Image (cartoon, rainbow, N blue to C red; front, side):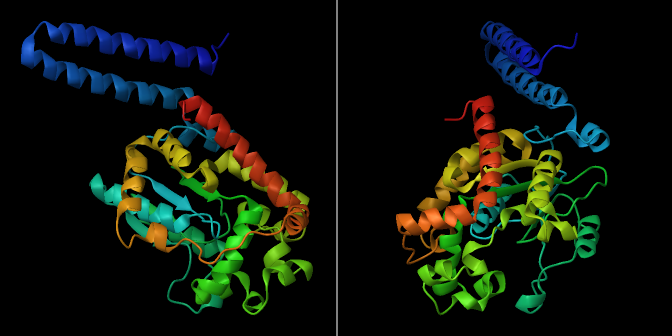
Length: 337
C-alpha cells in the first residue's frame, strides 16, 4: 500500500531535522572548519528536502502533463522557467510585477519580461489571439516572465509553463475598476471596461445593468478561447475550475496579499524566496508604485447595492470561493498565519 503524502511528509521532515541535528553536533566538536561543514550539510539537507517534497507532489512538470491530474500547489524548483501571469484587472498585478522585478534583481536572476498584450497597438487591438500567445510563449528566452491582462491559453509543450495569478472579491474588484476608469489611467480603463462608465455614477451603472458593473468576468478569463466560454457561463465555470487544477501552480488572493506572497515563496522557492520582505521594503519607499497605483477616490457601495451586485456576480463568487478555499488549504499546509 502506497503511503500517504502526509506520512511521507512527516518522515521527510523528521529525517531532515535528524540530519541537521547530527551534523550540528558533529560541527560543535571540530571547531570553525566543522562549522562550515555544518552549514554546507544543513543547506544540502534543506535542498534535498525541497526536491523530495516535489517528488511527493508527483513530479508535476512531467507526470501531470501525461495524466491530466492536478498540479495546483505543487512545489516547482529551479529558475529556468516560463512564468505566465494572465492578470485579472484590478487584482494587484502591477504590485506583483514590481515586486517580482525587484526580487529577481536582488537575487541576480536574469529574467526576460514579455507582455501578453500588444503594447504598441491601439487600445482596441492590444489583446493577442490564442495563436499569437502560443507563438509568443514558444519563442521566449528562459527564464521568462510573461504578464498582461489576457485570457487563459493552454500550453502543453514540455516543460509546461508555470501559470500564476491573483484574484479578488468580485464586488471589490468591480468597484476598483469603476473608480480607476474615472480617476486612474482612463486610456487603459476605457480599453478594459468601455467608455460607457466614464460619465455615469456607479449606482447608475449597477441599476442600469451595464456590463462593466454587472457582467461576470472570472469564468471566461480562466476558461480560455473556446466559444462556449462566452456563451455558457456554467460550462465556462466548470472549464475554468478544470484549467486551474490542471495548469495553475497557485492563484493568490488580493485581500490576503502578504500571505499569498508567502505561499509563492513555498511553491516557487528558487524564484520567490524572500519576496514578502521585498514587498514590505517597497511599501517604505517614497514614490513607490505599490502605493501610487492604488485606486483613488473609491467609495463603498451601499449594503443594498452590494447585495444586488453579489447576486448578479454569483458565478464569479463561485469561482472566487473555489480559489479562496485552495488558498486556505495551502496556508495550512505551509504553516502560514
